Length: 191
Image 1 (cartoon, helix red, strand yellow):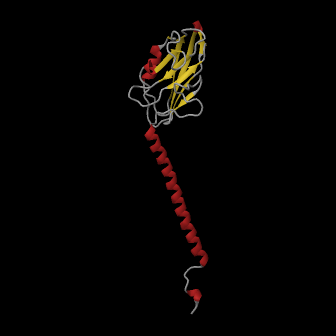
Image 2: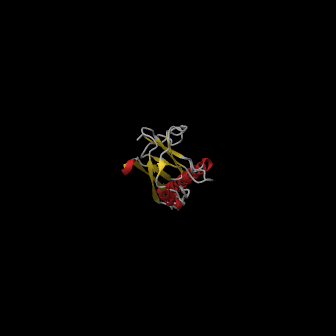
Image 3: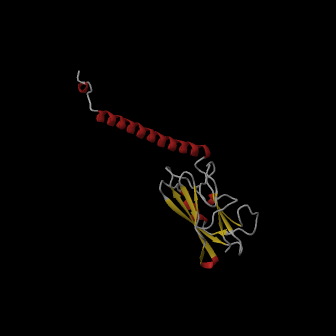
């Protein structure tokens, strides 16, 4: 009996088939592992809410406010930047609050300036001095009236008359009633 006739395929072909099968199984396993990691991340964000601040450095909360020009980053991709104050004619100051929507849906900015707070002192200070006078509320209301679309950016100009010299100003970026997004605090240095 001829032993070479018993085998249908050469040994090299049998080994390469086993290798190809193992490679396919390994690729499927890695794909499932990656998908599982993405799903776990989405589940975790769903548990603690996508409206939480998430960043390195200053946290942006009341006890650890962000500085001028810093950006508050939220888990869902929304970003808010409060620019540094700039002197304007007549002893007033201008500050721009910029919203960048990196989420996958439109975001309501509140519809009115009530979602933005501007006051004298650091966050948590009680009545340090007279609050700055807001000079362009109508313009601010107009900028916040429309929701911010996906991938949209909108600057909201604030024009302020300082309430006192040498006193820092806090800008609080809040959200409409009923949303679970954290308020971001920005501390602008004394004028």
